[in-house]
Image (tube, rainbow, N blue to C red; front, side):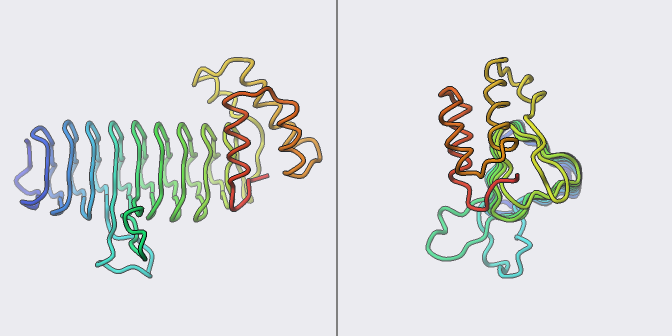
Length: 262
């Protein structure tokens, strides 16, 4: 274990043997950090926080800190869980979950594996992120946002509270996503609108021409056929071949509480 002399690590914190902690960083008493993780200088990791293996936190990262919700005080700091292989660049922040009511065990702010959070990104309380998520500089997630796997968000974009960002969605820079961003699609603008399938992202993830064709047809039926959402879902069921991407898209739209970005 390599802990700089100026770092403050609480004796109750649980660090794997090869964890590195840089100058002036602070690790709280309820923190657990897995093997191969590097904590850079001037970082703060506190709260009930569990960090997996091979993560890297660059200068000024703030993890597991009290949420920026004024309804919650220091005594209501919840849990933070981070998987493996993530990078938190300079001055990124991730708030702990809130703790209200009888459902405290469910409360957690979480990140999966192999995500990249560029400089000054913010993950607010009670957000849940999947795997292979990329958030470019200054992207901000409000509280209770869910982000599915392989999502990319352009710089300076923001996501409204309790919204969902679907699998393989691409959110363009400076977008205000105030509703749910549908899977496999590109969303951009203020107000946000869906402009087409995320073709490049789909190709990079190995989606075949046939699969991309299904997604293109779903986009056409939902956004270019002068149908309302219910009618479009019905036509997608009729016209698009039964497949993982069709079923995921249908389930996503039907479960949407805020409604999807159109």
